[in-house]
Image (cartoon, rainbow, N blue to C red; front, top):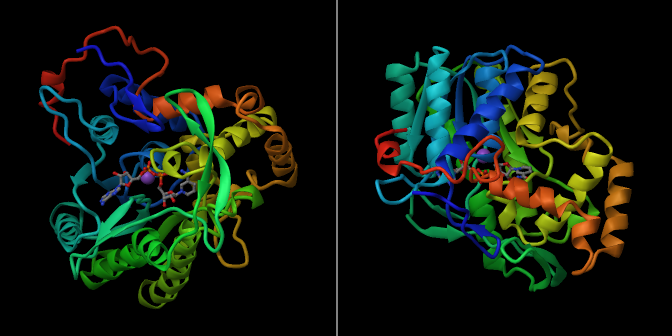
Length: 398
Ligand code: NAI
Ligand code: NA
């Protein structure tokens, strides 16, 4: 089957398994040729199949640390007739490369929010992973969560709070920019979004791992947060998702106390840069910002994609000699994004941008390319006219 990208509005509907492989290999090549660091040897990554979680896994396994990893993710399996999700294949390609190096790369697929998943991971750590982990990276992004105790389903709703918000959003399919107005969140939208994207599940993970005695002395855990500039405040930091991130950051401070006492360990969030991922493409108004930011950071020679940003985070900050923490013990690799000169130029673009000139003023081309690459399209060196053998691929298991 020859696979061409299918996009509906701003949603990608399929992926190219061979392109996904090339993307994993490209990320591996990038860290192999970058600065090396020594970090945790035994790592659990929740949300390991795409975006920041996948980049984290690649950096840790191939960037000098040679970490064994367990990657938890929720992905759609490919069959003989139907192509699976990008993360399904990325898990497989990552494991193959890591195993060639003699590393353990265990993929566990299912719902990270459930009690079952926590039990399955703990059992695996005890029986096959050497009994303890040194690092847990929480990089989950989801639109819904089933509460493991009540089975109630919560759906996040990314909205402004207090008043409505008007902004522009991209339609990648039509290559157009459209104005959207978002009405303010209800109390329920807020509660639900915090329930899904706040720190509750991260805390359940850490407590379950401590309880089961599978964390080492000096154990560290990190989750990824976002702050962003004033132009994004309405939808992000002051929006429902911002409240969820505040909750996540408070969870980090609480877990830090617990871990200090129990394991001489620590917990913190890293506030990462805005990049194009499956999750961020879904945030209203965010794509325009991401594409303006790319343009400006590119011109200044400081633009980073997922792997570049994540590898710098680990090599320079988490396990390096240049950690940047703010007064709330949040690690701040986003300091480049938030530089005054960067944000002043983003603001200039925002003042002039219209439905007609957005392709010239922002880097829409690059935004679209990055968007397509998430699903293995537009990757250099891949022949997209060639047949993809789904039957062969369906024999590969995570
Ligand atoms: P992503 O969509 O690329 O990755 C999400 C991961 O979560 C995938 O591996 C997916 O399989 C997994 N997942 C989703 N639901 C699951 C479930 N129920 N059980 C198990 N796994 C599940 O997203 P991205 O952007 O990498 O986000 C990761 C974290 O980074 C999020 O906390 C996000 O807020 C944060 N972040 C993202 C930024 C961005 O610009 N993309 C900027 C700063 C922080
Ligand atoms: Na991720």
